[in-house]
Image (cartoon, rainbow, N blue to C red; front, side, top):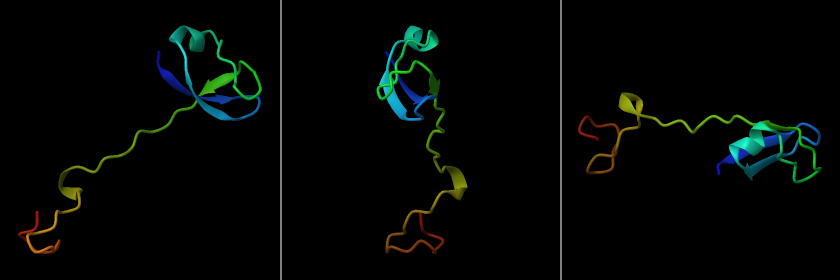
Length: 71
């Protein structure tokens, strides 16, 4: 069973709840705080990863980051 980030439409609290897809689809997940079944999905963006030439350069053999021989 997956975990869902859900927000209660009544008391506005957010919870991470483990439930089946059927329970979520049929709105059978009660709010742990107020008991309401009006739970809405909270969409969160994944963490960003820096890649490519814009990534910070690794330190060179003597610790500098500015020299052309650095990482």
